[in-house]
Length: 119
Image 1 (spheres, rainbow, N blue to C red):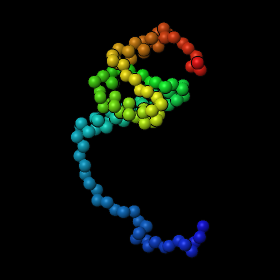
Image 2 (image 1 turned 135 degrees about the horizontal axis):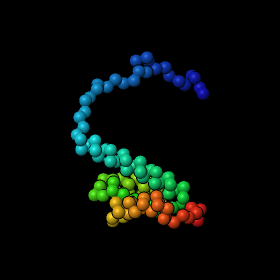
Image 3 (image 1 turned 180 degrees about the vertical axis):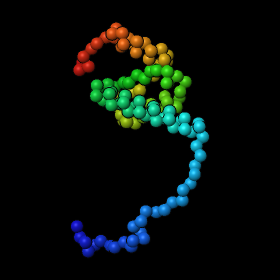
Image 4 (image 1 turned 45 degrees about the horizontal axis):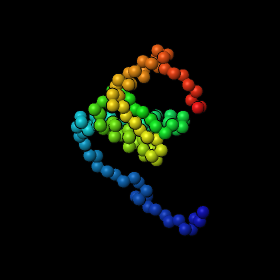
């Protein structure tokens, strides 16, 4: 630390720049798209962390949230590939709503196979 090399700054230059407030209107479509992307990124982050925890190279996304929702599918796919550096593959089922419902049913009924996640 060499104080002689420091230069003094005037008080006027220390203040944060002032910006005029600009009123921006967002359409309902913009807000809906932003919410879909936000939800998809949150789901992807949880799936990514669980895939890393369980050392999985694939994640299967199911559920009616993905039905005909290309924005969510692209966001899930791109986010997973970026965060995992291509090491974790995001997979989508053709009948995503059906398989999501069946998985939930089997899990809640106790019919799903129990296995040791360390294998």
